[in-house]
Image (cartoon, rainbow over all chains, first blue to last red):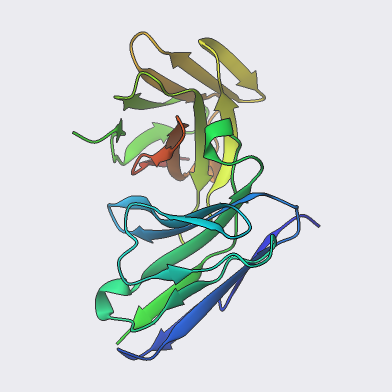
Length: 115
Length: 108
């Protein structure tokens, strides 16, 4: 089954404790992206990757890191989480990247709470 | 000015009626347009995409694109309570830009 898998689905942690949210896709997509979604603000892009070893900042990259060492995986790293990073996070993937205007496939989301 | 504007709603529509959702945008170079449906706490799922001016129909859904007037619409015919969700408009011109979404409520 074609899917984007995020883990964990839910996480409650404390300020400053490093965490990683994993994202994996099995569709051989070149493009992967991380979003956060907050009430009233819609989806905001954090980072994206056009292919292996190619990553770029989105609209709200501060406080986050990513890596793309393999085509299928695109982890999101919070080195020192803060309460303002409490949010619902989505990973998404597609063929050819945004320039090609391809529909994105989303993971089920990770609800992150930073205390 | 936001690049993609959607009325946040909620838009309340009686069951069986036509729901009309609108999205305006500022980038005339936008090439691809998408409508996603998102249930509360769930991930967005693609409903329709449209690249050319005019209408595109898929079952009960019709996407309408007017590049001259810079708007894209989604019509839902014979609205069902299961259509109650937030509808996100997104467009692409080398960067994918998302609207904040319109909450649609279908009343039985």
